[in-house]
View 1 (cartoon, helix red, strand yellow):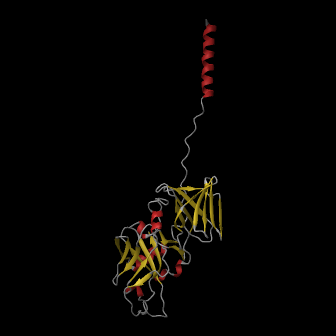
View 2 (cartoon, one colour; view 1 turned 90 degrees about the horizontal axis):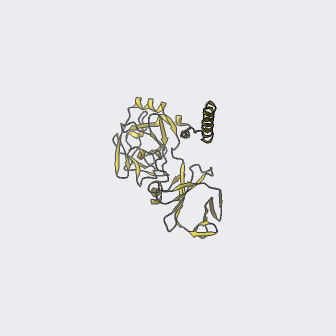
View 3 (tube, helix red, strand yellow; view 1 turned 180 degrees about the horizontal axis):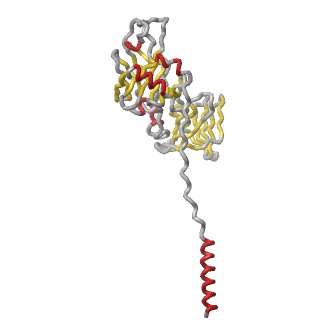
Length: 304
């Protein structure tokens, strides 16, 4: 009887051991990937322009810093609009892209060169600020004090920060190159509504290109296997196919498994002095296509 009971206990132990051996060891839940901290490029030699810099605020923690470039030879107001603009908060201010020559005056007159009186005290100007998500983005300063920021149909008034307070903020703040460091390069689509978009690094010397493919609002970044750029055109090869741009024929092809489809070219995004021309397709890329959804461009219209 005892022997039979012992055999049952041994058999039960063997079964439990087999079950334990067959059951996989539970794995610990994978750790979520750590988000990479954005790295911004410092704006060098900012100390040289700090004495000529003025600061405005919306009263909600946002600041616009600007510096006027003077042309003492002409001794007129013509050309004395802000050439350096920065937007951000007390901790970080990002340079704005201003299209070349994109500034104007409502009035012109003699410049007062009295020591201590900066021409900003009497200027009246407006300056366009590059913002790819807006059709209109500019700043304007009437003759008296306040400054206006226009984002499409919305106008926000910024007020001058008192000199001593402005000096303290500007000396402590970090100044950076433009926050958004990608530039549009090419956009096409097929007849079924699939878009092919290529962007590149904002630094012209860097051959850093990316391709996004998909329907509106669903474009996905696709890995590039190879890039060819020469006088005949451009080829961007991906694991699923190749986008071929033929310059002489003004032709765009999507080639996949020896089959080719002609695409509709939408935009080549011309650039002048590092600033892309503002087009409806630029607004499309930064809007409905959703390529940069959730990303800040670093312009005033991001926050106003």
